[in-house]
Length: 198
Image (cartoon, rainbow, N blue to C red; front, side):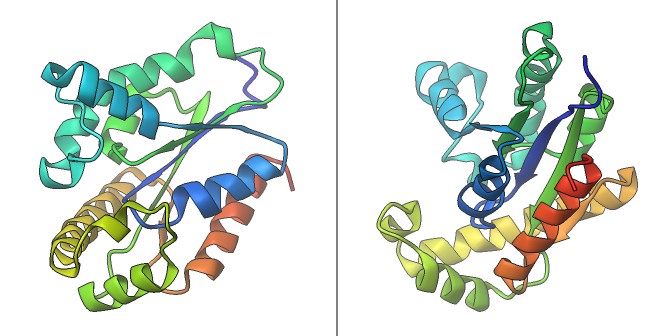
């Protein structure tokens, strides 16, 4: 593996702006090929439900259990030699990954991980933010406020767990509880500098 060009993972809870803000901005720099795991986890959920690798259901089946089941697939993806000689390393955009599983299964010499969440925002504040910024393509448009509040509660708890594991394993965690635009700018700059692109 050319360790000068590490693959990277951007992971964290839903509605942090991972896909449309962070990963899209990084991909547009021309340094990475963006791999979104949503379609892959949807494939597992609908074609092989017995694996219990869920996409849409993750929020209410305990994220850490899904992470434990998905990590072997992810480890194979980033460690296979077929991707080592690519001009552009992979940027993997994923929700269902816990820091403890990354540390246990992923070789950090070839793949770095960065985690995001919103551990410190109120449920009402996050609901307001989501409603003000959602587009016609967002799944949140098909969920009423009461259900969305329940999901936000889970996402906030998951954010707190992710943050605590990042602190334990000394991994980068970015708090998106306030000012998403500034937080996005900060993580993009951090990742590019951390990988010697700026």
